[in-house]
Image (cartoon, rainbow, N blue to C red; front, top):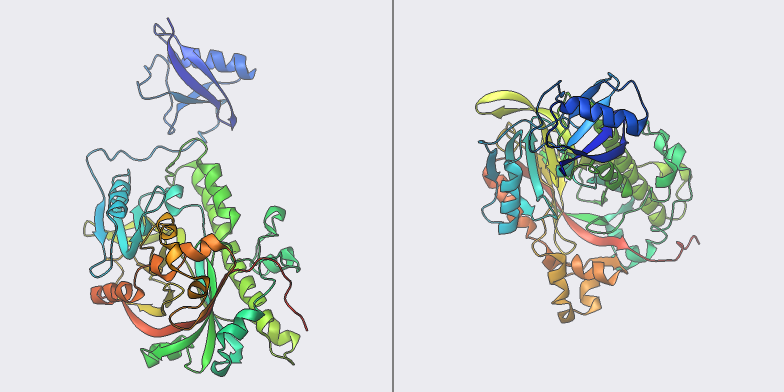
Length: 477
């Protein structure tokens, strides 16, 4: 008889595995698996068999029809991925905070699918909700454990706000400032290990050439002025002055986050880690490293831009001082307490393109041709899972923009209706990130303020939006 195919992995080193056929007339499956494994791995001490998820297979226990992966050990505890809790007849609650903002039907379908995952209590879409490759962007997922794939590949992606203390509003000449931003796409010539040590991080050589770079996609650095102060008291608290110029830096952990996600999804496309899983802490360690690395990356981008913009006579000590106002992470998972079914419960909040609403003020950037807002979270956070929108949110898929690209001249794409300049030499990116690709930031902010989860502090006006400039060292004269 042909039998059933089984995948047998060594528990202590799960890269070692083989496939064998279990005869249909086998009466002791555990004994069969151990015999095959001892012969294949040449390890006589193998004595335990685990089903994927951590349950131990006992003598003469039948194998369920849906079990095909097993892990053999010499007595050590199971180190595979712990199975997600059963949720067959229950789906998490779905909330979408949007009235004025457009929400794509595909994004709603993706949000519903996420709400059906085992262990998920709540799937909350923000006004910037839009479809992702597999899971929606602009949402918050509340679960008992951790789903790394819901956080995505750019762990730590977020935004920093800095005051450009060496510049006054009178220096807000878009074309002149744009011309000064050079050399930012080339590897930084400083010491990566020394820079990272300020954040308590060891350096990883494979990441050094990416440190201090913006990256592609929707990442950017933007020089701004204050269009208007909405709340004088909150603006003063956030150190926002109408006479100053500011810098927004939106980028993440570059290739680090994607490598972390690739490692944890080799065996399963959407693994679940309970707090009891041996993979739980190892993933969070990598996750936390990526978060801190991304913060350090944003700070270095800001410092490099500051060096580009320095005025003659500026001292080295002034150049090296970053006037950082805040930093917010958009892709992460964190432990929190939330009302679930009327009771407070310890949960894990997954943010995929969402800003935390429990850590003070947060920027909400519009498209490169729109204003950005600085917002103050309000309320107890239970309705919105302690989160706010992270920006305007994509309105049209990237490929759609190419179908209308011939309607635009290059100059119309590099100079916005607000008079700001766009630095982007990647022709595809220039089209895919045009203002028309995004929702109205005013609608997004209105949806949140109407819901009573935030209030405005200030509105920022773009002067220069930096994406990528290929080649060329900054003129150091």
